[in-house]
Image (cartoon, rainbow, N blue to C red; front, side):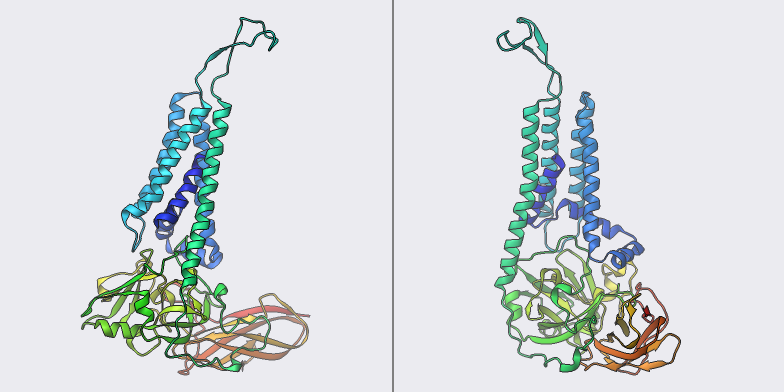
Length: 515
């Protein structure tokens, strides 16, 4: 109960102060310290569930340590009782250390200390009060009179040491209420404030609208991905356990470094600039061959090239280091932001304000590059610099400095180990080669010749393209393999490579049965 109260009230303090919840501060450090293969496994096997499991793991560890402290605190030995309070203090101190050392681009050290300090004080005081209630000193009391009891008058009965039932129950109830109240009030405050702030933001009307999506861009095949990925289903890969809920009225982007003029842009400043609307497919470098970490959306934002032109880029710069509100840094080639592609500071996604999970109020969107070098969410800092002068978060962890997206294709239907009926059958999926477009998709059935699939209408070279393949299915076990050719005529490589260091490669296949 003491540990629960500490975590619950610390959670509330985190929402009110903007500092990290101690569990999340520990979790982010665990993520940062984890070896690359462990991170890769978590993304591949757990997806977004890795955050929940990490939180649960840390919380369970805290509970187990708290149980040990509780056992010690119930002892009649004064030294063990003091040790119980000492364990609570140690846990609180660990939270403080992790909070101070956690990365953050905006929260000061003092603000980062607030939640951890609240948890420390509550843990120590709560443990002390519970231990005190469990270990009341031995006292003697007169026995009731004959009229009130059967014990002979004048005799005394010694009360057992160590348990003041009333005080114990009141203390435990108060701690339980503090734990539940902290989490409950925090949920109300964060949800209400965050949603109200996002709802207040009105999606601006772009001066340069995207053309209508071609009627034939979506194939008629049940099970294939939707051409425009709905916001709730758009993939998410990041290192945060708690999604930032930034007040748009307080958001600011600093543009500095190797520029002639430093800029500080509020959200109002940004949306009053020239806005464009574009369809762009994003891909995560962690995506395995045939994986789900790719999605297509319609974005509204300010061309980054316009901002850089106003700031004035100095000679010698070749990179931009962008920083998220949590302190994560991303390095992007300057050329990719100024070569005419639709690199945006996006404020809207599929006609809505950016979802919190996808960077509200502002994020970067750069077609043709994997997200870890281009798609900074919750961006607050934009520094024009040189690659030789810094190392971004992911490049420090073994990923390539520059990472153009590779040509790739995926089979959505039939699913692996599906069972089809003999006769006319259809396979369908998507292919992408941002900045180059998809010229052709071919399918191989078992070990037969490559056959050309039917392509859906192309939206732009920066979006994925759907395809279908129809054949007469015969009974037995079969394998389908797919490959794409990009707009330059280059065939997708069959050479297999893992996501690290610059994106996976190889051909996607699926095995299925026909009855």
